[in-house]
Image (cartoon, rainbow, N blue to C red):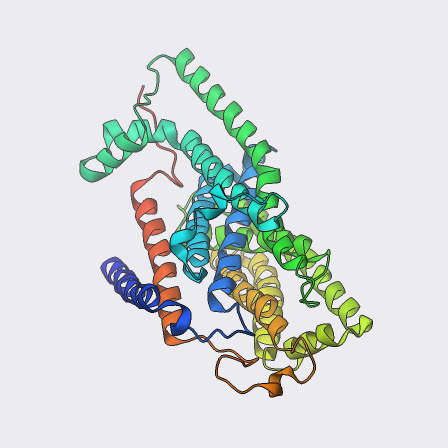
Length: 413
């Protein structure tokens, strides 16, 4: 089964890279995006994965900064999830650029009044911080693996340990541990506003779009942050429930994770409800038409089945049911259901904003395949998206096999 799993991921990655080759060779013409409908599936997955990353990282800060020792077993898992989700999210940004080879222009041609400019710098700092914190929490075990493991795993551990070695004396090991914990806490404290800036800044890119009443709200960045906490805690709950080691603390850890997940889902639901009620009551035509498209129009299935069903109601029911028999599987399914439902949340955030013409009658004034207000992703968009997701999952799976993400290695005396 493991070989079949890796083979499937490899095939999807290869097909996805073929689709990316077609996209880079032929430009954006291979998409079904139009002059009026300029953001599609790639932007949906961009904010989905950035949310997973920010939420997973914020969960790790609760563990390492606020000393939630009960969840320490999933601290590394949270950081690793944050890293690979970030890689996937930025990959979707890159392929959505009309000229991806010009990505470095923003680092040379400055515009400090731009929200997007600040967001790019947040991303760069965030990558360095996540990698640094992950190395600090794993360096003792990487050093141990370099000496005790065999073959390729030993070589990887030796390379990633960067020459660090655990002291042989008890006093030296205690100092090393204290230094690591101190720096992890410092980086975690720095990382809290940075992670909030990463996903809150992403929400701000939408919120400051005055030409899009559906997005133009001060509550949107806050919804982005809370939604990130929902998706991040759901992802870690799913991974730990199904793939974490069976140990005495596992039921307690899953109970804590699932309780946080229910709390975040509840807060997110209240915020979304407020946004919908205010938008409908305000009766701004462009806003209400987008909301109607979400509730009762072309995106209704994403709202009722995905956003309310998979991301809200089903996880709460599964977690409530799991408490009776303390079932790890049900808690893991609740996490998986939430993660899948958040994709529908992202669809309903991005796409409905484009269904309303900026000027009444504009949709009928000109007739052209690139001047329409409806959108469905092309085959190239779908295949390239599957390829990026498969690659991220493949890399995460390899890291899971090679690195001490869950089990803390015993340092030989």
